[in-house]
Image 1 (cartoon, rainbow, N blue to C red):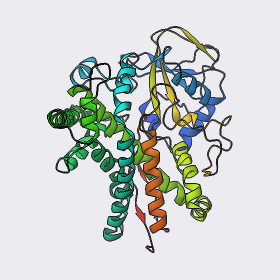
Image 2 (image 1 turned 180 degrees about the horizontal axis):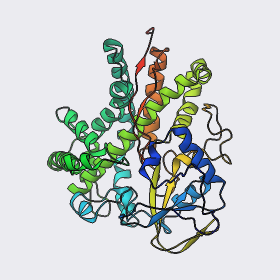
Image 3 (image 1 turned 135 degrees about the vertical axis):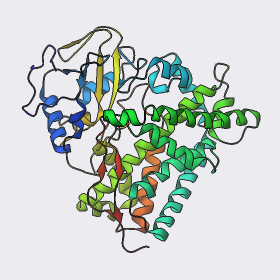
Image 4 (image 1 turned 90 degrees about the vertical axis):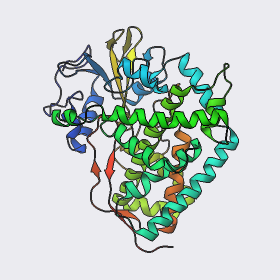
Length: 423
């Protein structure tokens, strides 16, 4: 691990190495302390990745201003080589198609126009109605069955069912697709043992392939007989003379499911935990649920940072805060650290639903890659917590969540919960 110009070569005695997968297994307090230290340095620190890696390392962007600046400068900070760690192999991208998050303009802009135009006012209105209907049904089932895991019963259900209905996925294959989503994303950002890699090689890619085959088949059917759903709109769209082909449709669907479901699910689970651990804020929200829910949702997103990081590649030499980035080098935008930046968020460790302004980067740092599903995620969070706190005002988490030690997303595998009186 080395530091470039302007940053000291020595990190805290804790030996915090953001490139080491073991760092992400450390207690949250230790990780936050490491990021707090990095934010005090004059320049971004360069971390060398593990021996045998195809990449030399990355510059860690940990300040709010740096993360936002990189996100809004796509000509300097490229997404095309890949934004995840590890970057997708070329053959994987050839077989499965490119996700929009791994594209630069003009191709990114073209695909984004196709998708954006498919979200018609009529479709958005219908989706908002479906969010309310689905949230009520989920809470009905919670009351009737009294499940113990909030993630499985609530947090994973709402975003997944809403996306499937919006896309036009029939009820029959939904359970199978959800299983494939879990298999495709379970190891993202997580260090696996050699024994596990040998036992289930390529499991995530196989799941991704099966998922894309399912949606491609639905896409072919919608081209023949369009319906009033998003898949039909995407495959029949006429932007620059084309809609999405089968690979693009499969890639977009995978992005929508993995990113949309995972991100909203994690924010929802963290949100219940935050309300449980902060009874004063919970009481404040309950005293004016209609007026306070928007602020509560934004603070849940800031505090939990559902997506921890995205990677960018330098298109040309560039200077930032005294550090010189060279063409072809990597930077990592740490959204979790930007959302704790003391220069932007007073008392950043506190959960404060009245925080204003709240310019968090829970959906990215802005620019052309700002999350397409931000509005949808916010609406789902507002609706489910309004429904839960109206009908189950005593709902709360029990014990500590089962966290996944991922460097990519702030994932909760399970969270026990309970509730008392039902209204």
